Image (cartoon, rainbow, N blue to C red):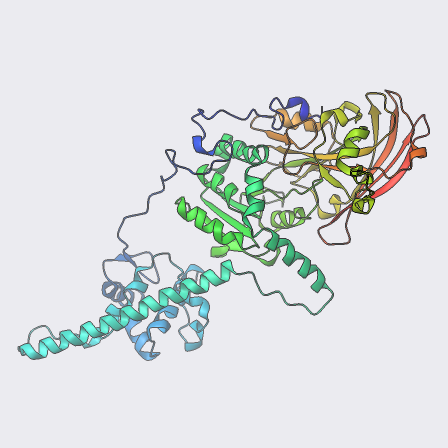
Amino acid sequence: MSSIDSLVANGGSSKAIRSDDEDDVPADLNGLDIREDSEGWNDVEEDAEELAVKCLLCDDLSDSIKNMADHCQREHDFNIIALRKRHALDFYGSIKFVNYVRSQVQAGNLKPQCADSAWQDDKYLQPVLENDAVLFSLDELDDVDEALPNGGGHQSSSTVQAEIATLKAQISTLQAHHDAYREEVSKTLEKRWTEAPDRTTTTADDEEIKYDKSYFESYSYNDIHQVMLQDRIRTSAYRDFIYDNKHLFEGKTVLDVGCGTGILSMFCAKAGAKRIFAVDNSAIIDKARQIAADNDLLQQITFVRGKIEDFQELPGGIKEVDIIVSEWMGYCLFFENMLPSVLYARDHFMKRRSDGSLDGLMVPSHCSIHIAPMADPDWIADNVTFWSDVYGFDMRCMMEGALTDVVVQHPPESTVAGRTKGHLPVRLWDLHYAKIEDLSFETDFVATLEKKIDTLDAWCIWFDMVFSADAPTGKGSAIIDPAEEQQLAKRTGAVTFSTGPLSMRTHWQCGVCVIDRKADDAHALESGSQLNSKLTFTKGQESRGLDVKINWKAEQGGEVGEQLWKLA
């Protein structure tokens, strides 16, 4: 077993998959059922308090916009009514004016410039103050200086009725303007945060963008998300870590990179996160938003469509987060090349201390690569080379790629012929410190055979994940001693899982690298034989592909080889 396998009683996670009767996790979320109806799922209540009218220049609250305008004139020598008339502000102009003044005051300018050009930018259509009562009451300022006199004669009934009719018509018009304004702002914000940004190029990068487009479109369909959600090992590991460490998430701001259906964001919301930004560049984000709405979680989760690299800030001007959560792993860990996007998010949005070190948590926090020699000619024949003789017919042309591509399969434990010393990984990364250049690597390792074999048939590659509750302290190393994986798994609050052949099958399975050899090239090896080897991972020709190269040489027996396999 691997260092994590040895801790896995259930075959995939270092924490046992909990039974459905545990009351610290909503029962319906055990495994893969996300139809939440447990206590607390709908516990977010809307604020029912009436809004007061806040002064444009200070924190004073009035019971009407007219009284607020009087306060501004009296206390700040700021005549709102006169300014509206002077600049002939219509409904939209008034909206921009109010938001401009509030933005200036927020920036510390208590005497904002009141020239026409100051508030012309359409960005001032977006409210600065949430539920700003001033914006909903602007119609009350119209004709305020033409109000009927108090006393001094009586008006005829017909005159009064005519004026009432006129006022009603004005109110109706203003209401229509207001409704149109709200709809326009809603559309503008929706377009800004839900449509992928226009990324035009005139260079050879067009091919990479085309490949990216195909990649993101592949995540727009339900099938792939169903497969991932039904992967109990994967989904339960995230759920268990988040729910078992609610104290880490309560009141925090979380960024979910590549949110998919939003399941991880919803876990964070249920764990008490104050605000979650869920980012995805595929059309699935529309379904994710609907799912969150159906579960009354839109108060906490904001969905943003686009590549995280295209954003300098998050909605609402948010520039830092406490936690980054992401399910970025691909076949053999790095296929699909999504981790660089997560590292970008970490470098640009993760909260930092005064000395520049990270002051947040990566979920998951560590990842590792394992490799083992395989020997099982029957399994190879059944799963890879059976095309040589299909009911007496030669179909070897169907084997194209079988010996040059990484085969994604979950071989049985019996096919594993040996392991590295201590069953340790050959490489272990700390994601709080890893850089993009750390993801391409070569590392030497020694595999010791644990049984006698007639021939070395293949190499099996898999990965393990660690979710550590310990935030980084100061500076650290991206590549750490593989022996530390066992200690990480034992820490309080930690959750781990493995994708290896000694564990329960996951949707990632394993990467089987079948050796392309001739019959007379096979060498029998005794139990205890050592294979001095080297594993090399490099980015493939396609931007999200992966090349795997393995060199090996037996200390005895004549077995030696070098081969390159591709994941594309």
